[in-house]
Length: 486
Image (cartoon, rainbow, N blue to C red; front, side, top):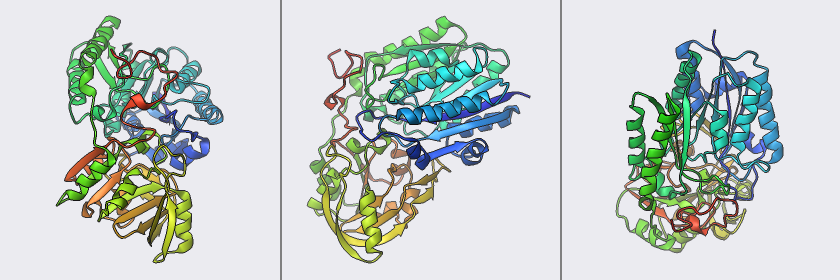
């Protein structure tokens, strides 16, 4: 029987954020070993679920090693990297004779000692399994591709969607490509990079120009000699030499792979100016949201995008909502101290407390609010819907405070607003509100576009600000567009 090891270490590292990623913080999200990997990840919206589905389809014996999934944050500590990578190496080695390996990585993970942490993981696992064992890896749409990643893996498969809703399909595609390799197929892979950081809001695959780029990739995949074409927008909030846009192609020959990847990358580079965007300022956006006469308006707080590794406690839009006397609004903040104060006060009791801006001043200042504690909850819920469907989430103890015009949801752990179940589990109907602030750039759209009448993407300050020219890059390879005139 064919024996395939599955596993992964998944983290997107914002190197401008001072909060490091530790093993304990991985455990707050997901950290599973051995058979728990199958139990916790099957039938979820994840690459691992796709791997497992492929194993069932082709009758493989699966050897689950470990799956670490961490909420985006600062760089992974040296200790955490060595602990997790060492565990993955040990379990892969302990699996015995393998016919293949499937790994789920992000592609924009940075550790204190490795700028290309994903490439280092691939190097170590390749050393464990040897040169001949087929090795296929899935990567996030925001991966910063490196030559090392392409060198150590046989095949790299990236998401086709942002918001990311195709993880199962990509995991199954990776399994299918591994199946072909087990049967004797030997693919060729090529990487084409271009010096550009596409605007985060222009990366949405449901809208132009990125929608056309993905469509072009799918057309190329229909060529007889081409098996897989992956587009990677890159992660601009990671200050590493290789951050930026790239294309990876897998084909029957090296020439075909190179021609395919370079051709698509050239087309995108020729339209690089199409990826720019202009956004409204906070005061203007809040005023427009208040003026809407019907339906739900979503305000996207781009500068404090939790999915890009920010604190999630920014107060800029909350302050504007309070200043402009907004009604029927909701803001979610990560603020453990405020949660503790609410727990001490108790449900139905009124209190005044300082909220937000506990991590830094990049995202506003602490705000003094007065309100009534309406709910205290454990913060555990299961996602329902396209984004991370079936995955259990834990945002820590959660308090809901009613300030009169703004409903404030306070959490102990950072948790992006990727799924409507996050609010529904608290007894809040998102569709019944007038304004919701989401600390997200694109990922929230999978949940909120179906219920929103209006969406306003706001140019807020912070460690995921829309205009990357605001960041003090020191390691990024230059020149690069739009930081430099190219």
